[in-house]
Length: 232
Image (cartoon, rainbow, N blue to C red; front, top):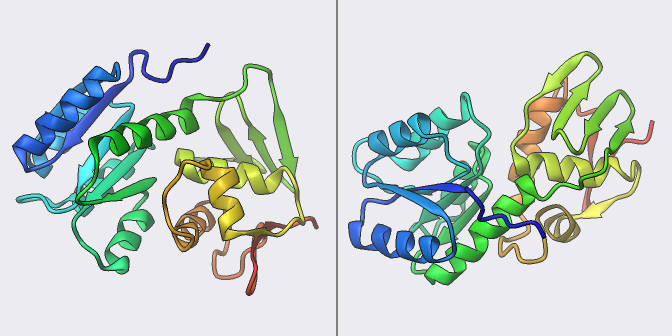
């Protein structure tokens, strides 16, 4: 049976040391290998020096803030990022998601919820089927097992969340998915995000897969309903 905790390394970047220690204790009790940092620069160095399977990243950090850390990480890594924020403004969360974060948690939260989110995030990355499966739609080819996307001759680097959303839609070209359906089918029913989160991920996906994101060929908007992968 697949065990997403096996050898999984989690980096927690949180300036509240006591909270960071609590998260470490809960995650280690769940079987994860955990490292903590209390500022942005140290967290970025830790994530780069000891490649993480997932990063828990507070937005409000001294010096280099969480958004800057996420921006730097995304320049060379598709490691899943779970943002932690005390900010209640929806726009703050969307900025983080648009930078490539996969999920977010709002303070105060239960450490058990964090463990559940980490498990879900790792399942989206590692819980791929063992059999070979290639999904083709238009000139896009998705290798499910290798977690690889190619458009014509170009290899497209996607985050785990972007990959799953693309896969859900590309498996059924022409079908219109509501935002709620994409949350449930692309991110899993345990995902606790709100529906507008999908818009941020779709924006990121288009910026990578579309030749002209302002006039998308592949990921089409159906106004008032949701999104679909083009069938022609």
